[in-house]
Length: 119
Ligand code: FAD
Figure 1 (tube, rainbow, N blue to C red):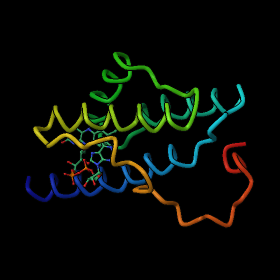
Figure 2 (figure 1 turned 90 degrees about the vertical axis):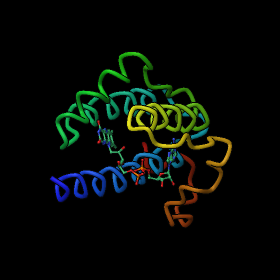
Figure 3 (figure 1 turned 180 degrees about the vertical axis):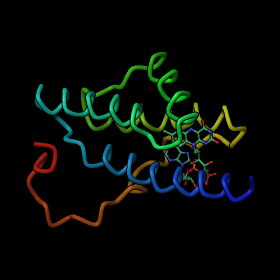
Figure 4 (figure 1 turned 135 degrees about the horizontal axis):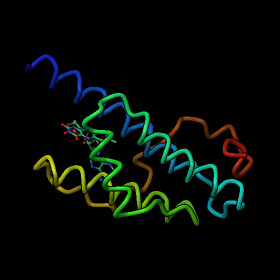
């Protein structure tokens, strides 16, 4: 049981890191196509998340708080908020979303063109 919990937590940490990094790289002014891509991605991510119980909870959170995809700020803020919802559910401390800043850096500053990755 302890082993399972450790593995589940490890998957969670890796996934959150990736999830928030996706948001940090999302365009500041996305096209309609990019907005639709992020929205679809989030719903599919929630459906396909490997921990079934987590996926179920997360889909309930999504139902209550639909993805915000209008800008990078909106998407990052929304992701921070929804992660805090999961934190609250698990009795973990709230993360201060004002501290997001450069916390999630992809190490890919060479990709100059805005929105390149998401297009
Ligand atoms: P994590 O919550 O994994 O966070 C990792 C790091 O991200 C933190 O150390 C902090 O630096 C930063 N961080 C924390 N909060 C935020 C925030 N709001 N915004 C930005 N950065 C932040 N586990 C379960 O037991 N039951 C579940 O139902 C469940 N559902 C999950 C659903 C999803 C979609 C995901 C990705 C994970 C889920 N998990 C669930 C795993 C759980 O959320 C944690 O990842 C795991 O418990 C490890 O927690 P942690 O304390 O190491 O920090």
